[in-house]
Length: 183
Image (cartoon, helix red, strand yellow):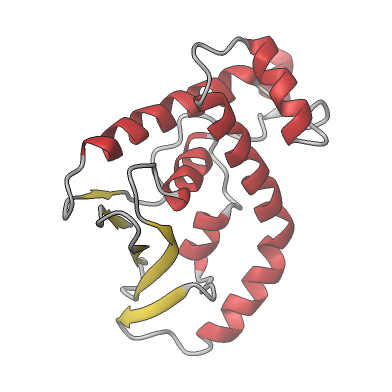
């Protein structure tokens, strides 16, 4: 994925090239100095090791309404595959979005504590207790988001940030219950 830094108030987009060689332009939001929404999702999903978030869906073949085909031959039946994947990923995408919003809220805090993260999670995630919430994982993802926000803020118009998916996950969500029990 390539995210160009465009002049403020322009319609922002990312260029997405999938492993099958098909390229899309993914439109989203208005350009500006803030880290784009799609990068926020990407960082949260990558850092939490989400394998069923929006970006995993796009990598698997989902084509969203906000995506425009740019180049490359689309595989036969691509539309049907996309519709099926959208049905499959619908529930997990909601959860991925809630987690991304939580990570973004934690990233806005100055040195958040585990208690602050848990309190925020109770307002952002309806089932945080049952999900095996790991404040350290959320905090690490928030730190990664802060780093990317700083990188974005230093870009000049015309420069870009590029990412590969799957990026190197540093955490896994939800945590493996066996690993959690083992300490």
